[in-house]
Amino acid sequence: MSEVLPFVGQREAWHEWLAAIGSERMHHAWLLAGQRGLGKRAFAREAAAELVRQPGHPRPDHASHPDIHILEALPANDDEAKKKAEGKPWQAKRSISVDQVREMIRRLATKPTLGERRAIVIDPADELEKSAVNALLKALEEPPAGTFFLLVTHQPGRLLPTVRSRCRVLRFSALSEAELDEVIRRELPESDASIRRTAIEAAQGSPGVALSFVEHDLAGIHHLMLRILHEGDRDYHLRGALADEMGARPARGRQLATLELARTVVAGELAAASRPRQLALIEAHGTLMQISAQSPTYNFDAGLLVMEIGGLLASAAMPREAARP
Image 1 (cartoon, one colour):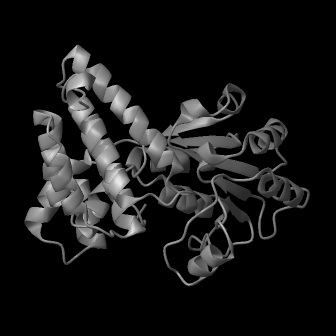
Image 2 (cartoon, rainbow, N blue to C red; image 1 turned 45 degrees about the horizontal axis):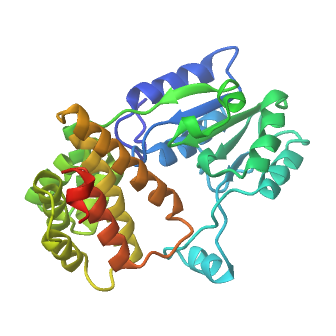
């Protein structure tokens, strides 16, 4: 397509989506699967807009189109709702509720407003309450004509097999270095070339990680993470330096970016690691994923968070008893 899309990369996924839209029997439910930070959020919204686009018209705005419904976790409280309305960082509830899903299902009783198709984006489906999943399953089993579901998922294995079996998987891959550079240049045009290079190396193909790296100036944190992973930290000296680099009262965005960077750094060590160390890396990565899953709903103590991250990195660098004396 000649249009400029709000994401870089994922050309194969986009072409597969366009081909499906143009087919006579398009599947009614899709899993947009891949690690965090690959652009699934932007892709899902533009894919929904492309789905409901009227022939001969430009792709509509997904935020205001009456036939695009986006289910995501609501603000945690009224104060957070106000922050969201003002365009400020805000905290979400822990999950997408069954009431949200039921409200969406009630809307499906009517026909699409402007055309023959309607898109339901659930972002991410990993955060659906158990009862919400059961309610969604009924809609997936008997979808109204013209209704299509896009389920964003960072961990497809967390979804029920009955949900996965009703969806066609659209996989998202890591971006190339050139694509990452394009993303950073476009979103952060004032970024320094050396910082971009370091961010690209650290990001392991994730544009989300690369942008956060530059935006929150994580070069020093990244350097210390690698030192802990490669040298260990028996005397806690490097963990102390990591806490100093993080800062006494870092913004929430910086904390979350550091957490995601740690997960990415650990994942990047896997390929070259010995089998015993791979097991330690996998365990550390799993714990980081659990902490990340809690991030939308919890305020982390910055000091405790950075020491936890440092401890996990140290445990993957040496035997647990040496890493945590």
